[in-house]
Image (cartoon, rainbow, N blue to C red; front, side):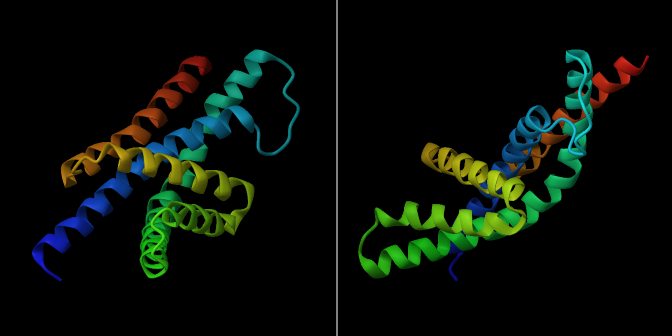
Length: 164
């Protein structure tokens, strides 16, 4: 592999890490509001609902972040590479996004609803970042890890203040 090919691969990995940071934050907040109590207890009031949301989001973050960062980044790279290969072989470049989307969904079926939602969010977020056509750097990828951390801290502070 040439130096320019190595740099291109690194840029893709950096973009995927940024995508994972954004995706896990959106996913956790979304699921916090949709499934504030994953154990199915009754939510008797709005204040209890909001507290349940604030308590669920950090938990969703802690469990989903490693999975989305590792599994999501790897399977997304595989999906993109396979879809580019198939699109190049068929000569139909428009099929690349469709094949990649299908592969993202297929890889997201591992835990059904939860992982499927995460994989779709990952795919959409990655396409938005890819469309911006920026050259993402290592420092940006590292800084992006502050996004889920900030979300986690925000909701943990919210829970702490409510407990006072």
